[in-house]
Length: 184
Image (tube, rainbow, N blue to C red; front, side, top):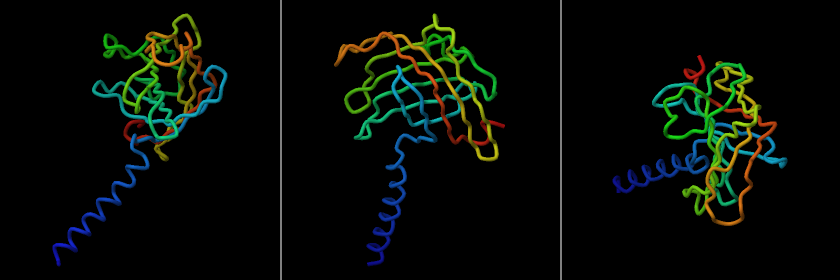
């Protein structure tokens, strides 16, 4: 009987501890809004320390569908913890991983959110690609920022409708919790 009570207690603790993960399985720490090709756009945000190179912060924007599957993934990586405007000239590709400049990559996701669809990189002919941290608050462990991007199609997955040649993110704003040691 004692073993049964112990097992039921442990199962209850396990089930309630998993509930929190079920509510935020991707570890989102904030949210974002803006315009994507002139249409309203909302996204979840996850900020992490850039690893293994420890060059600033990686900011990932993820759009989920109604069933909770990932559909869009925008990454802005190596963002320095400074309120200066940081220009973006690079697409995040394997041959640029060790570079310390800010880079970006956008993908659509298909199936149940684990298959890469279309891929977009930075449009270097557009002179207004940037990210800027507008607030770095170590007391609240929070950052806020703005971004503006024009991306060009690198790879069409040939599934579904033909994707646009360019995506333009304007009036992008985000806010997110961060670890205190990342911004001090």
